[in-house]
Image (cartoon, rainbow, N blue to C red; front, side, top):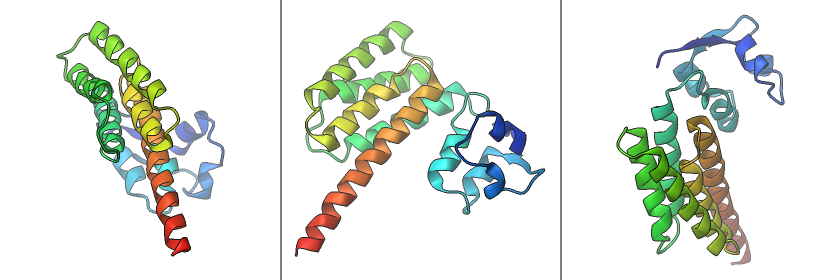
Amino acid sequence: MNTQFDIAFIRSKNPCYDPARYLPEGWSGSVKGILRHRDIPAKDRLWVVLRSELLSSKTLRLFAVACARRALARIPNPDLRSLKACNVAESFANGIATREELALARADAYDAAAAYYTASTASAAYEAAAAATAATAAAAANRAADCAADCAERRWQVECSLNMLK
């Protein structure tokens, strides 16, 4: 999609900051323009663009699946229910799986997340897989991105702590 939007659109979504902090008044641009804007923190760029008004449902859902798979790749032996949830979400995005199949995969992924609740990295990965099967594509993209980012941050914190102890 090459949807154009402006600073007023961003403000209408009630960000926790004034977009004029990063963009000049009167700014307008595209999703690619925002994503390439290096002065805006990555999390804020994603917050702006991961919306059904700007990206197709298919794009949002496939992004969610990519985030979930990335999070799952960080843990050894991920639960097959989470992997299946990613596959079903991808199939749904491509028009192959049904809403019913998506709902069942989501329930299984949530069960996997609950089973791994005490292991923070695994939990984030399984939550990302569950998020990839969310009912709406925008919710799926945002939740999976948050879970995948959380997983990456926690891994970094562990590695940083280990390096400090050497």
